Each structure stands twice: as C-alpha cells, then as structure tokens.
Amino acid sequence: MTKHSHCADCAFFEDHVVEAKADDAGLCRFNPPVTQPSADQRGLWPVVTANDWCGHFASGIAAE
Ligand code: SF4
Image 1 (cartoon, protein in one colour):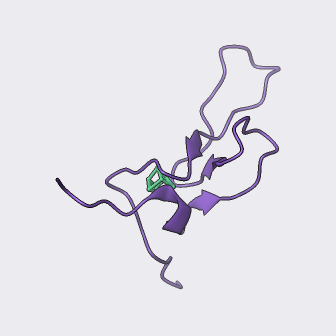
Image 2 (cartoon, helix red, strand yellow; image 1 turned 90 degrees about the vertical axis):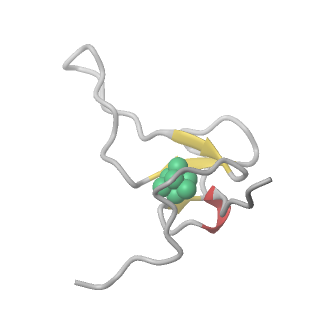
C-alpha cells in the first residue's frame, strides 16, 4: 500500500473550522475558492479533512 502525506501536514491546509463542519476538517488553499451559481454568493474554499490527501501536497511554500 502506498504511503501518502496527508492534508494535516500540507502547507496549503488551513486548520480552522469556520467553514468546515467536521472536527478534523480544514480548508485547502491550493486553488482559489469555488465559484457559486449566484453572483450574490461568495466562493467557497474546498473543505478537506486532516487525513485527506492529493497530488498537490507540499511540505512548504517557497518564498518569491
Ligand atoms: S487537498 Fe492537496 S493541496 Fe489541499 S491541503 Fe490536502 S494535500 Fe494539500
């Protein structure tokens, strides 16, 4: 079985639960917020859990 680095250790994981419902959830900041069908609604950041993972995992963000 492949070992993955999880969202909890990713530089793009924001560990707060303002928009997230589950205790171990946070926001993924890799991509911009997802747009909503109505112009008067704000976009939503993707919600992930600490044990989720994806191919964009980063242990840090390089300074420009
Ligand atoms: S979904 Fe991918 S980029 Fe986003 S926090 Fe998780 S590992 Fe990082």
